[in-house]
Length: 474
Image (cartoon, rainbow, N blue to C red; front, side, top):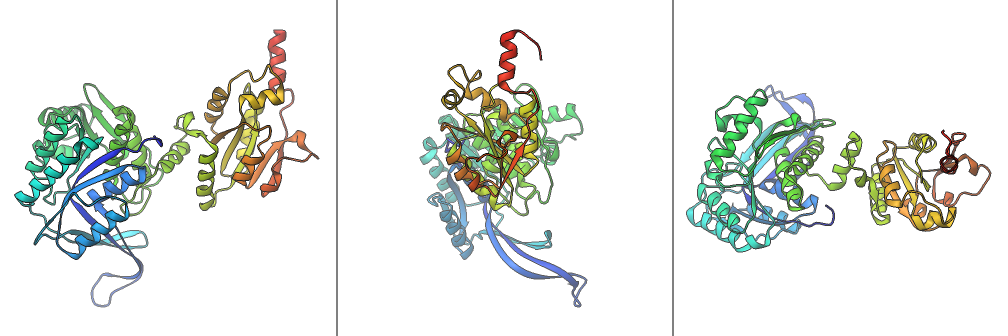
């Protein structure tokens, strides 16, 4: 996915999320309310802007269309978009309209108050026409279209149907984060992303088991002429139906704030579909992204690196996700060190994996937080072991190592020694086999500490090959 840079068009209600952060140690003498001592103040894009933030964090190129007011908040919003590298050519300025700004007071990581400044009435006909016209003018440049409806008046029936009509003409999928109880204005979209409560209100059905869940999915699909029907289920994940119903559960490590989780879901779904993923894989990807975001405070975003870390923490990631290039591992190590993670490095051929290898790697991992394994390429193994080795090619050896719970990352190196790799990583702990006792260890000068691990007696790739050749058993 890192090789893709999808182009995604976002149309919807743009706003600014404003946070006042502080602590609370007393009650006001004027009224029975908390007194918050404000320590800092932050602003981020909210509403459809949070979808844009999420897309940018994932690596998308984003187009935006919407309506703002001719006011200071509108000017601030445009600057925030420009700072993200997003063009504001698709923004329509409507006089007398208030640009939305939601202010939240947070004390000790707990939101205690929110106050809003905004317009909620439908945008003017001329503004709606301008939004649709802009979207139509760049539709051929987009991979996917998102309608982010926060019920603030931008996604009118005319805007929704105008966008969907143009998108279908260009063969583009439209994903909608819906609002309200009447979803017919989204008719013809690829899918909607209501949560269970919203879907219940829109369909008039109480969703309390798989039977009622499927009925609601089918009702949405038929009513809105969708290609795929979807309902998000909070901690229970995502359910979809495009002929058969499937559920994809999620596991959040810790939930601090669900603000913006819906934005993350639709952004990550759109990103994944734009990268060529199937709807099932896109749903799984969106689940992981949302699980990361709810562990943060405020309207948050998620990166591909964070999603990979989350997958690894659940031991549910694909082995290929653990295989990194030299350049990638250097970037990852830099980020991990910034988080004060202890990096452990070891290396080897790991030709025919056996119990000695596994125990060695498990002990190596116990010395720190992240274990990186440098793996000799096939040419490197031949140089060290002779022309009959390796038995297993480098792609297979790397994939198997990546599947081990103890191993976080695998990096191939073609040199006879991992000197340059160790120099680049500068691990906290360098691990080698017990046979290096009293010997010089390549790259040890770049590590904070060297540790030697004793091998399991009688367990080696060479011994295994000899037994195979002799036709004996282990």
